[in-house]
Structure formats: structure tokens, C-alpha cells
Length: 236
Ligand code: CA
Image (cartoon, rainbow, N blue to C red):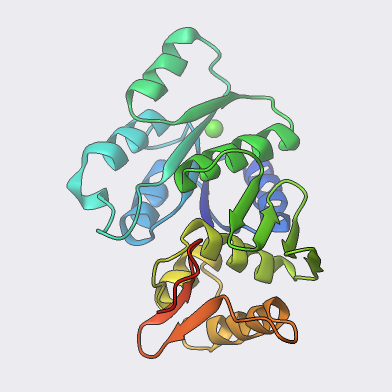
């Protein structure tokens, strides 16, 4: 999942980005509203952590533009980003204002990272149309809170990036996902689009998913990308 942190307090922005990256998210940071809008226009983020008090374009205005300006409309096969407002403004008026502008949730500063992390998980789950901390597709199971994954009864020993990739596949089971889309949603801006990092990581994940005698749940569709077979387990 690809996240954008919009926060002008550098120390807080760094801490949030570091913490979220540790949880396997791909995270970019914007220091003001203008930079946030520039990034949102070109990258299909899954979720935006949006500070309201920003030095240039106000966070509420960023939210309003993202929700109403066609320049920020998601592509056909993409969903609009979830927006989690981070604000020191504790008044009811500001909270209602944010929700009126299309924010999905808000968190009043100061907050603990654990609370932010839980809200992010919940919002991304809602995006995937599932409830609970667990994702299930076929015999694959993934606990997004404890960072554990299993195939049937077998625990999977995944790196943080493999875990993030499997989570994205499971949230989009049955869909054909191009290498470009995986790069956009599972890697951050520091990933080099000209390397074969997606192919290599999908390759190691596929090897870990498939034990002796098991079928391979992630199909390769030549020239199109990859697909995690959905619950029905039907072939391509
Ligand atoms: Ca601020």
C-alpha cells in the first residue's frame, strides 16, 4: 500500500514515515499543501495522512480539491485515496469541516503512533471491503496487525516487502496487476522503475508461497502482469 504523509513539521513527518515504512507501507512525504497536490496528481496513493495546518494550501483545501477536482480523479481500475486528517485543531467545527470535505477519519494531535497505525489499518481494510485484522484469500491468511502470514497451517517467513506485496495482492485478489501498478502501490518514490525489483520480489514471494505439491496462487500473465487467484481458485 502506498501512503502519502502531508506534514510541515519535519520531525513529526520523519517519525510517521519511518514508523509506517517499518510496517511495510511505501511512504512518500510532502512538506506543504502544494507539494501534496503535485504528488496526488501523478501517484495513485491508497491513503493520505493529511495535516490541516500547512504553510501554503490548507489541508482542508487539499482534501476538497482531491475529492472534487477532476485532475485528481482516480483511473478506472484505481480507488480514490482514503484521507486521514491529522490535526491539532480540536474544535468540533474543524472535525466536521474535514469530514464534509471528504476525509474518511481524523486524529487529534498529539496521538500515539500505535493509534495512527490502527486507524491506517482500518481505513485500508475498509478499502478492501473486509473486516477484522485478517485478510483471507483461498488458503492464504494474513494478519495485518501482527505482520504474520500463513498458507493453510504453514507460517510464511516473509520480508517486509514480500509481506507488503502479498497484502496488496490479497486486497486485489482476482485482478490482473501490472508491474507498473505494483511498483506504484508497494514501492515508494525511491524505487527505480528501470530495475527488475518488482519481478524479483514477486519471484521470491511465489517461491515462498508454493511448497512441494502445492499449486501456485500467483499467476503470471505474460505482458500483462500478475494475478492472485481469488477464493474460487479458478484458473486464468
Ligand atoms: Ca502543521
